[in-house]
Image 1 (spheres, helix red, strand yellow):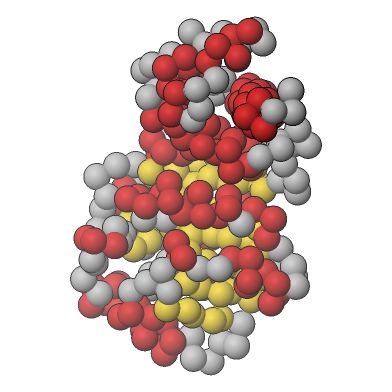
Image 2 (cartoon, rainbow, N blue to C red):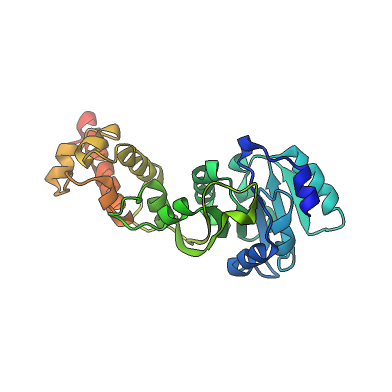
Length: 279
């Protein structure tokens, strides 16, 4: 295995850090909850180090890899394994929902996630939350801590709110730099997200909710009174309803963002009615 990995010079542009420790790979799979009836979607299998451990317990593994060199290697390496399918594709545009439909059940997603696109990958999975049962991943320790941060903390941000909105989350364990080749400059952590069956009933516009979250955190140093101007000119109306817009976005939990968004929707509906002359 070491010889094979050395032959694949990592591509810095793809954020490749190949996992080298079999015990850590086994521990990640054991904590993932993957069983013999599960169909697994693996993000960026690399040289297949984690894939081999998943195949020991899963019904099937569909691995999505963007590096054509590794795709060709994995096709040869797993040529006799009918339960392993390698797809040459960018995971950020991969249709998770379509794969779940083909599998006729929710997927368990797992992967050693490239640090430089962690946010995009997580958001992509959240966008397909109805098709995913769990996500088990290794990522930068700092990012893992941010995902689990509570409102009011310095590291609480967009990913923290999204994670709480779409999933139940837990940090599994930390991983040393020496597990990977090449060694990353930072420590890593393994996390597990259990995606929600459904979102809160009081969400009336998920697209607008996500816009409110993104826009307010885009100006996190500013009070909500100022950052909300990027969504709608509704400050006076919200203050009349009793919203404290001197607060900053990092003080709001998921429920707070939902209530804020629903008030913005209410304001928009009133504005439409005024313009149409119905009130």
